[in-house]
Length: 290
Image (cartoon, rainbow, N blue to C red; front, top):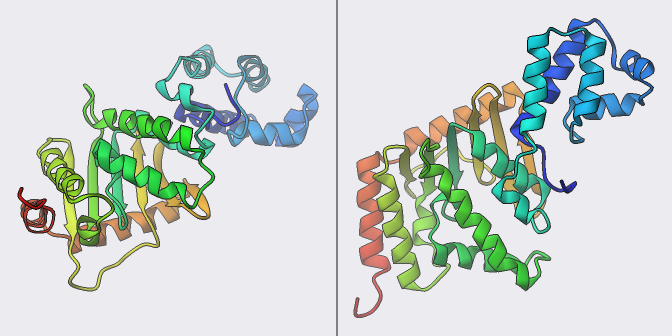
């Protein structure tokens, strides 16, 4: 796998378990390195999922920690199961490790909280709207034009998580300004808003609009908070200039959860949001003669 593939939930879960087992064995990272003939930095990289875990390395660690057969089997299956082909592996040549990590996290998450102050949530964008967003960012990035359509494929394929057999539960808050911000032709904007209304009817999708009126708690940019079974919550912060940031610190995750809750409390109800989307679609984005 490419070095840009990102670390999956399985890899991170296994890395955290290896650290826990080392601590239970009352060994320091330096002691493990000395006994296995590794560098101390390799032990650190393994435990922080900074390198891909190899089955042979994991077996060595588990033998040193004298784990039970059950623990050994669980961890080995976790590592070997991560080698299965995933749809996003076909795009490792064009996507950053941060985005690949987000995609792999979404694939295993059971829930997602998403606040969007600038554009529609990626999981709820139409093809035409998504194309416009991706092409728009080309002007401030180094994305070669031939890659743009492949990035669009990624955006649309990501959306399967909310319509699969075991769909992700999505709670999205969109700033009202996003509904009014014209980034494409009126027909594209109207189609996008109609798509939002359709998506809000799904039993696993909750959609709220943060109105322009009033003073609200806010964030510097988009927030994605993922709830992942047997792993915990992860916050993903996106900034098109400075990059992306993953946070698994419990205190910071709690702070973002409070911000999201305050934003939700300041938002319109689901029914009111639906009505506002319809009104803006009809009044602002109906094409001439439409």
